[in-house]
Length: 143
Image: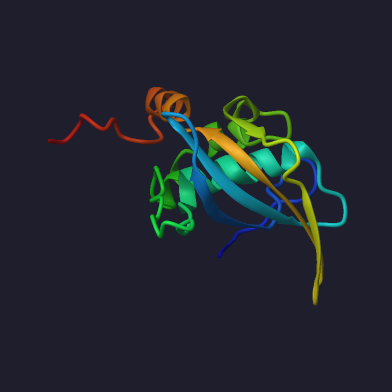
């Protein structure tokens, strides 16, 4: 699992882990995300999933395929104004993810509790929105 940076209260990103969980329909990506907090909302899970897909990528699923990040980690700092709004608690990132019914999980750890679910991320639409905002380069640019 990739351990990732934290947000927690309000618009802060919660601490989370993300791994690949397979591929959905065309343009969709399934990820398993765990958020480290006693109280985890659906919004926290979706924000962490989208944030992980964009800036961290995720380790492979059962097939071993690794999903690379859409943007380099530095893009988050260089586009901080956009990212702060996009990844806010009720930000636009919520529109690009949905939780798979029946996939919720709560696990006790040595450091507390982590709650997770399998989240479907609309990678195709997310990439278009991030290209429009200038956070990621177009796939056709630079060749």
